[in-house]
Length: 275
Image 1: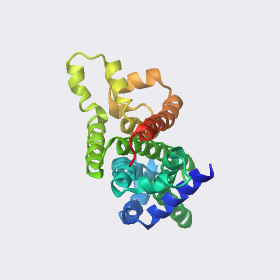
Image 2: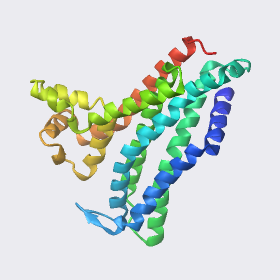
Image 3: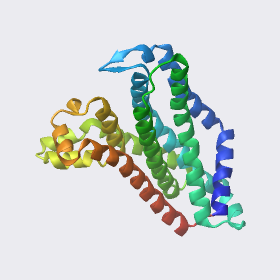
Image 4: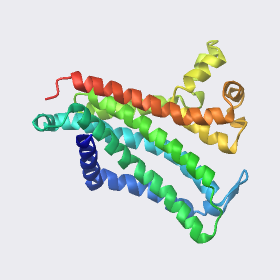
């Protein structure tokens, strides 16, 4: 355990010094600043006002930005170290493969989730200063969703990085993975399946296997409990999940999916020719 936490700490320190982390932090911090500048905290849409309105917009933007940032930066973790010859140096140290792999995973999760959470926390602090009502339920729920989304795509990124033999291939595979998941948002490709007489329940089940779709539907459920925006698809979802049940699914499923991908990545990493 000591080596695991030391590896995580070392990865955090390296990431904090990297340029990508500075850009990553500026992106999410800049989103909050821009939303304040454009007055979204003062607007009213569908009953959401103040910070509630800002958080709703912020979570939608995070869904588009967070996965690709996590994937691109993570896939270079193992593939880049393999190219740089770091594995040969690592194997000469008294650090187990499990401690190194999971230490990197935990350290990277802290780094990718911290700017996203701090941006939301900064918005709440500013709201307290301005005397706005604090939507604690939205803050807690959105924090849990973002944590689950970051964990999920971090696991996918670690799996890709162990399978790819070069950082260029890993980045290409990461972008392709993100693009495929993005295409399945709102049943874009599933519309073709329905035209081919695929049962609606099967189409929705395929859609809800997509972590990005699960995340987006859960965020919609807070301001649209009946999921009117999804049309007839909402009946299939609400008949199989209650509102509380789907929210729990939206948090638990991405975490389990990311953990499974990371576990498979570790098995591949342990059995591969490291040097």
